[in-house]
Length: 426
Ligand code: SDX
Image (cartoon, rainbow, N blue to C red; front, side, top):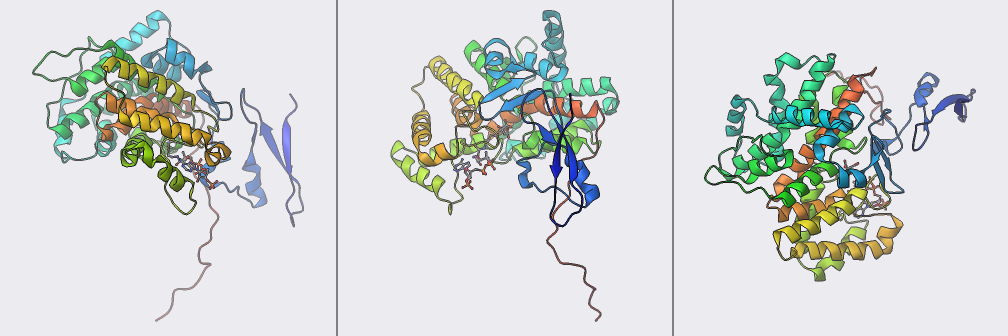
C-alpha cells in the first residue's frame, strides 16, 4: 500500500517537511511527527488531546459512535455473555480462552488471592479514617518487596506470574483496606467462591456468622469489574505506561496508575457523583446545579458527565444503568432517592442545549456509584473498586509495551520562563 504522507510547510522555513502517515485496523490515521525535531520543532498538545502516544491491539474506542471493543469484542456482548476473569484473560493474551484454559486460569487466580501474612502489619500504620485509596497506593506499591523471585521484567514468565498476582490480590487488599477502616478482622479469601463472590465475602463477611452468597449481587459485582477492566490510553493507563517505560517494577507502575485514577476528573468521579447527588439533595435543586455547570466562571462540573473521547453515550453507562435496576430489584429496596435525582438530572442534561452542543453524556461513573451504594459499599470505596476492576487493563498495557521494543517516555515543552541571566555579584 502506498505510504501516505503529510507535507508541512512552515513560514520562514525553506524545506517542506514530509511526515509519514500510518493507518490502524480501526480509527483515525496518525501522523508520525518524529521528523519535526531535526527541523527544530516540537509538537504542542497539552493534555494530549490529539496525540497517539503508542500503538496498541488491546482496546478500541469510537467516541463519536459510542463503541468500545476489547480485542475486537463489543463491551455490550462481553457484559452479556462473558465474565470478568475471562475478560482478564482476553485482555492479556489477546484471545478468548478455551473452556480448559478458562478453568486453569480461574484456578491459578484463586490460588494467588492470599497476600503475604506480613502485609497485614502495613495496615496498622494507617489511621482507621485513612482514605482506602491512600492505603491502596501504599500497599500495592510495596508488593514488590515480597516478590524478589519474579521482578525481571524481561522474563515473560516473571511478567505472567506478576500479572496473575496483581489480578488475584487486588480484591483482597481492597477488602482489607475497608475492614481496617471499620475495625473488623480481615477475612481470608475463600476458594469455593467466584472472583466477585469472594470479594463480596471479604468485604461483608464476618467470622461470627455464615456468609450467604447472593447470585444476583455477585453477578452485578462481576459486571461492574468487567465494565471497568480497560479503556485504551486513559490518564491512569498512560501513567502506568510512562512509569513502565523507565523499567520500574510492575507493582510500582500499578501503584502509579492507582494514584492517577484517584483524581475526581478520572476514576474519583464515581465518588464525586455520589457526593454531588447527595449535595443536590432533591429534584427541585437540579436546575440550580445545571446552571452552575453551564457557568464558565464557575469551576463546578456535573460529575459523571462528559468524556475526553466519548461524544456519545458511554456504552458502559447503559449497561451500568441496566445493572442498577437489577440490583434494586434483587435488594427489593425502594429505588434510592439519589437514583431518582440521577435519572432526572440525566433527562434534563440530555435535553439541555449546553450539554447537547458540547456532547456531554453520562459516562461510566454516573451510575456506578448508585449501584455500589445500594450494594452497601461506602462512598470512599468506589474508586478502590474502579482500581480493582481496571487492574487487568493497566497490566495488559504494561505487558504489551514491555514485550516489544519501547523507549523511555520523555515529553518536551514550550519554555516560557526567564532567558539566561547571570547570578548577581554581591
Ligand atoms: C473516566 O479517559 C478515559 O477513558 C476515562 C475513563 C476510563 O474508563 O478510564 O472513561 C473513566 O475518567 C470517566 C470521566 C469521569 N470524570 C467525570 O465525570 C468528571 C466530570 N467530567 C469532566 O471533568 C470532563 O468531562 C472530563 C475530564 C471527563 C473530560 O474533560 P476534557 O476532555 O478535557 O473536556 P473539556 O474539559 O475540554 O470539556 C469540553 C467542554 C468544556 O467547555 P468549553 O471550555 O469548551 O466551553 O465541556 C465542558 C467544559 O467546560 N464540560 C463540562 C463537563 N465536562 C466538560 N461542563 C459541565 N459539566 C461537565 N461534566
